Amino acid sequence: MTRPKRTALALAMTLLALAPFGSLTVSPAAAAPLLTLPIAGTTHGNGAFSGTLAVTDVVAQGADIFVEGIVTGTVTQSNKQPLGTILNVPVRLPLSGNWHQVAGLSPGPQPQIVLAATCGVLHLSIGAVDLNVLGVVVTTSPITFDVSGDSAGPLGSLVCTILNLVTTVTGLLNSLTSLLGTLGGTLGGATGA
Image (cartoon, rainbow, N blue to C red; front, side, top):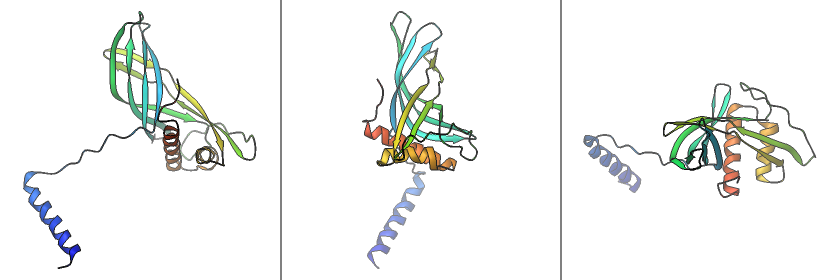
């Protein structure tokens, strides 16, 4: 018997031996964030929320684009006394931008070409969300940022692709995921103050 056949036979026998003990499940590892952004908000009693949004994915639902991620932060009362801390709360926030119209999605404004080597500025806005934090409703503020495009580098090429070349929802999601991951890697994972 050849070595590959012996290896396959040993693997099959091992799996058969494990079958009576139930199914073997492997839990997926926590997704590494593409990009970590500061996030802030307010409570109905003039309290404040300050924390981070770790963006883990970009998804589409119908004609809408969302970022999914994890929020961690602290809620303080109006007198600046800490009320509590939240850790790893999963969220889905709306994402909008000025990319060209993509089939099935609402059109954004058309980018302006500034110079032949540049392709404009990609404006991204992550919408607000209401979080229930320890029984207190926190309304987060939108997060907006602009990324300039220059076709000479990999980050700029992604911006140019999103602004000018993406024609499908899947292409847009893949390009946005790549862009946020590249931004996170380039900036050490976190942006903003």
